[in-house]
Amino acid sequence: MNNSRPTPYSSRHTILLGLTTTPGSNWREKVKEIDEFGIKEVALFPTYLEVNERQELYGLLEESGLRRIVFTHLRAEDMSTDEVLYLQNRFGCELFNIHSHKNEIAPPTGLDQFRDKIYVENAGKLDRLEEVAERYAGLCIDFAHWEAGLLQSDSNYDNFSHLIKKYKTGFAHISAVLKKPIYVDWDIEHKLHYDLHTLNNFSELDYLKKYTTYLPEILGLELENSFKEQLKAKEYIEKMIVER
Image (cartoon, rainbow, N blue to C red; front, side):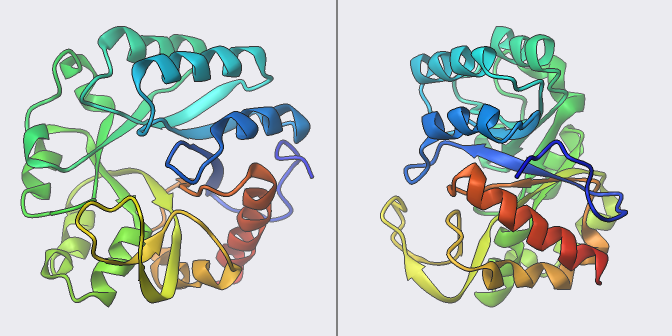
């Protein structure tokens, strides 16, 4: 299976494989899969990597056949201007996202110049999401967070569809949503989660049928699964979109 082949359907959406770095993701093996499957562009999620690990990742990517990183989830607390410029110049990355945490009302130190390229994700508490979105380029929608919020009757999402109409959506994240919530090891809050970064069954993507009218042009799979498995998930979503 080759990610660079023409898609078998007509769609205005681009679905990217996600090079994730969360605890369950083997990012070094994913880099190896880039050449195995002829992958030319990805979405990058380096949010669990310290600076030295990110440098290792970039070195491995430079040795691969990857041509472009379409968007990057910034690790705003320790990513420098030089690192963002590197992603732009070496991999043509022009889209970035951060979380809507209270300490990110102002641009992270050194990243102010990229404000018009940074989109704010609906993650965690959303009480100041609109305030943050006002200061950046717009929204990065995480559809799994949105669906999980509704399933858990999270009042933060009562007005979310209104915000989407008000602000530009640059791109979106797609993860799995479970039928029954579970506890996950990495969550320091130790709460139940419907949304998960590991896809165990294609049916865990079916929630997207509710959101097809909100899908932006660029969608990235935020999944710990291998690229081989993500390619199958990509095809499943493509079919879902064209049949809506």
